[in-house]
Amino acid sequence: MAGIGDEAAPDLGDQLDAVRALGWNLLELRSLGGVPVAALSEPDFARAADRIARAGVGVVAVAAKIGDWSRPVTADPAVDLAELDVLARRCARLGTRLVRIMSFPSGGTAEPEWGRAARARVRELAHRAEDAGLVLVHENCAGWAGESAERALELLAEADSPALRLLFDTGNGVAHGYDAPALLRPLVEYVAHVHVKDAVPLPGGETAYVAPGRGRAGVEECVRLLAAHGYRGAWSIEPHLHLRPHLSATGADPGLGDPDAFVEYGRAAQTLVHRVLKEELHP
Image (cartoon, rainbow, N blue to C red; front, side, top):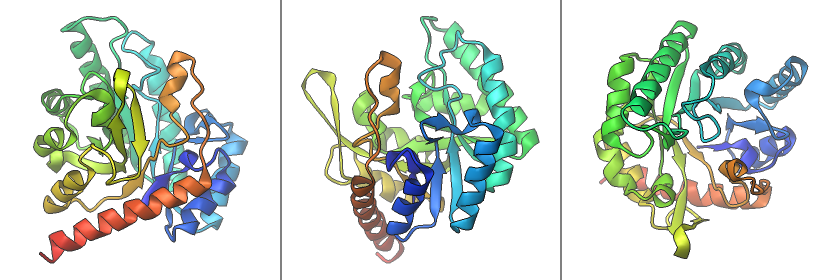
């Protein structure tokens, strides 16, 4: 079990405290003090890396901004390549190989050009990641391949690299309008990292995020599918109860994390995941 730290709090000390309160020793890093990992100054990053190591906490993955909702396919590709270069050095210091990416919103570009450009960018990123010893994990979220199993498989095929695998978020289907277990089935063998999240749809197309197992995302079925296919990676919670970074794209307040809610969510996620794993391993 792991957690995306800034879902608990902006401050690294509070992030570490929340993970340890759950009895866990794995953290997924996205931002510290509201600053993405790759954008931290060198001294700030060095201090953070030292503090994490002293706490005896491992970093399971870094959630990058590469290809996310803030970077459409029309944006300068040099920005993503530069971020990857920085993260190659920083992931080595943190002791992790996994970097979360997405596959670029269209920015108004129509198909098929959107698909060609997104695939070409991800292919280049994957080859650079392979050279750096990293593994990019593409999330079923923003971008060309985010909501389609067929596109995700096409992305993997075109990159043709062991440095590109998938991150499956159990809760994204509710917000994006697809059935998560159905999306997962043809992709499950390529999943290298998991975000545990649950949600319910609200009138007007809005989404409310809830404790895992209490929503309509099919979290339990997703965990069962992953376990049955031998998934042995981390189950990293992303509650979205008090922080929704994507809201920044619309100028809305993304909110802040909440340590108490994070810990409560983590306990619920651990109970669900452990129960399903036990049932799959000892039917």
